[in-house]
Length: 262
Image (tube, rainbow, N blue to C red; front, side):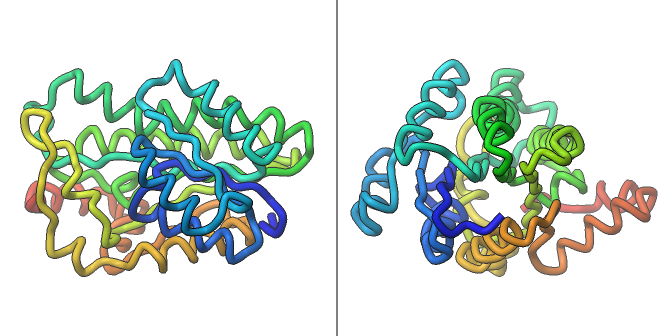
């Protein structure tokens, strides 16, 4: 789907890949609705790029009951949403048995239930128009489970399963579905990750610091949308884990216990 004159909605737009997606989409001629919890960050994006091109819809995506209203506000901003980019999410750096069920539910709500909910709100109108694109950010961790990422990996496996199925169901409707699987990207994802006892992890890692820039990933995502790619795996050598998981699952199981959480 060409993005010229289209309207894209980006969640998790206050930082990282989501923030970088805004200028990348504008460069392709799209208008952009931005969402995140931090309204002041969204207001800064509107001020930077102009209210005729960017609209702000603050929302807490873990408040699932509020998402239908958020979808209505996003649609009203420019009259429709042609491309939904489910980018918001949170990582994890805590042992499985030390992660409370409350935290498990919180990660699942943000990383899986919210994208599903927003998609269900917007996809019917896309189908009715005969054109649209839905993207969801999974992860290399959606193929490869490693220590201290149990629930995070579960959410990223889950979005792959759901949106692969949705793609098959929407075949022939004009609505495309893309899954994005980044490896290490230079964002605050590790610093903000769910750590021990429900607190933020509070530190980054050498792997993240050596990762791709959010700008490079954003440009690749926009190109993948316009090319209609069903999946984008992007990153450094860590993306080899995707292919190991596919073709050598036994080797992955033997190696996983030796991997040190970053």
